[in-house]
Length: 571
Image (cartoon, rainbow, N blue to C red; front, side, top):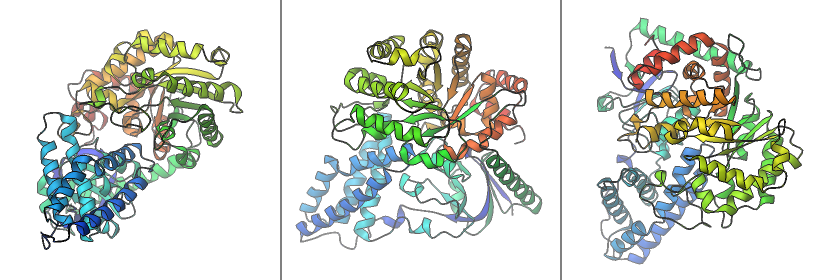
């Protein structure tokens, strides 16, 4: 009998297959067969061996292309070696407890401790502690955490309460055609990875789906947030046709991905790619991207004991520039803080790193880092063989004075004025990712050459909802009218100053959202490489007048859900 469950759309597309309920945590709990031990030193060595294996796994995962997941695994490495965890387990083993039992007890205590903290940031870390504990227990108990996911048959619809970051790394579009989660949010790391893999995903469906028998035929509608179990023949045929239409659209889009994207009324829209490290460049070069709209430079500064020299940075940027197909290279200055520390800077304890010393705030506190990076980028623009445009992007700007201070540093760097003259190959821009920057956009615009909107952080800061805290993450929707109004305000300031306005957050990579962004005044987008072709196709299907009417209606909406219905009136 047909059943329909509703949730939140998190990764677009249609997936058809057979249900499989995945429960990762119960399979890794310690059996309790060896509660006590008379050889504490042996048990401690077993724990150290397991910890080393987990550390090696996390080090590899921290190198993955997806920055959101890579950052999570770096945090997991820090938790793995944290004093509270290590000393707690050692003390339990010394009391005669086995390594597995000690690990389970101490991680459970820490999870409970962090869940009870009033600070949302630290409360959200309980999920990470649990994931690290599960990894340790898996090695101590000889259980493979990944076996269930890697052994799934093709055309599986995966049901789960939630998926940990470790689970997410084992998702394969060859096996999993759709995912429905009882909990989680569209901004969770699993949803981000599912979008990059092209796996339809819905979340927040409720625990009833976990009682469904495995093997039933089902459809995940990632466009409208639905799970349809045992759909009738007519509905199944309709979804099969929708899936075929989406596949044909993707094939057609990829065939034209290297062609310029013009709207129906002839407006050129540049579709750039986001780059996290040099390893991304092969995929970016083949994507048809018009340039690089966001080069994250954190990879140059992390996993080191000293910061990179000017010479090392120049070499890295030259390597990127030689591999890119477009003529625009947008480089974001180092954006780290308390949530992403580096070894050679003082470690500052902050109750909420997302509201602390990060981005340009940190760079201004360490002017040698700022000057060296700016010097390397000026050199790339005026002294290297790269013939394109180098755009310097300043992160986490919240005050006009911060831009003035960056300009003061640039003025002291030889070659800057030559490169920044009219017609030169060097530009300066700011990230609009906090409400203060959007509200000051008309004051910032005369000082810079372009804006880049970071919609993920803009939504998080506007709605006071931490994207990594599952209890409130669903509130941080970039489609919320309050966020859209800040985007519109930024675009208006850009138009008045005649500077381009780009957007590089997750919403930029959703083809269904592009008409709204264009109607608000966005002139460029920067997306993950796999999304370039479909976003370019969305540009070609967009009419300017219709997009502006859509934007006007969205700005008058009362909720993100209402805006979503405007974008998807058919469902």
